[in-house]
Length: 237
Image (tube, rainbow, N blue to C red; front, side, top):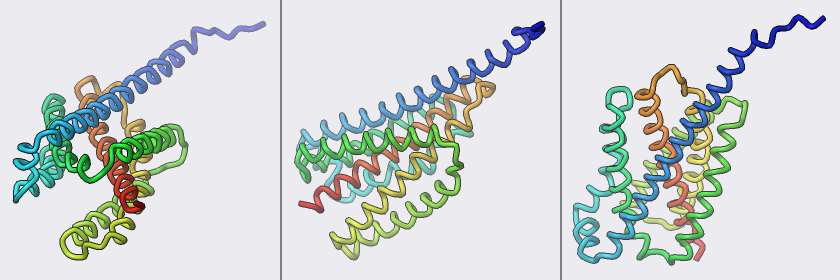
């Protein structure tokens, strides 16, 4: 009585399984590369902080501003997944991670190690939860991502003004809170966007470029959440 042929659906099932396996592998690659960036930044910052000579070389005088803004320049002008090869993107990603690591060396002088550890653990928990939410939610997070990016641009401008003109600690705390909220939204949105843009048909090279691009986006979001949490901890002392 049952004339259903199970082989009729085998292609659909195998295709779905193949897609799920490919997507999982792609996301794991993104997270591994993002974690590599965090590790590079941590090692470089600790190494520079351990050497007074390197601290003076990189973080005193006008060169401190070069170290501060060079990663931003690389992100905007030296990281183009549409035109660069996967190897080129890898080198740019490592350069950004190392340069941020140099600028982060000052936190070992400004904060207690316990505060740094707590901020890192809290940032890790927040980031993981937000990324899981972005991966699993059915809601379109595109509008949220756009709104949060605009918020980050506004916060960046206000942060520059506060750094050079206002120099108000209370205002800095407000900027940190808004930054955490904005980058939290961006983390969830970027994760969803990476899931949607993955396509096994793109081939290994294109998907590798997408993985480096996604890793950089998530790295920046994680670092921003971590640094602003650290700022709030000092503000609460």
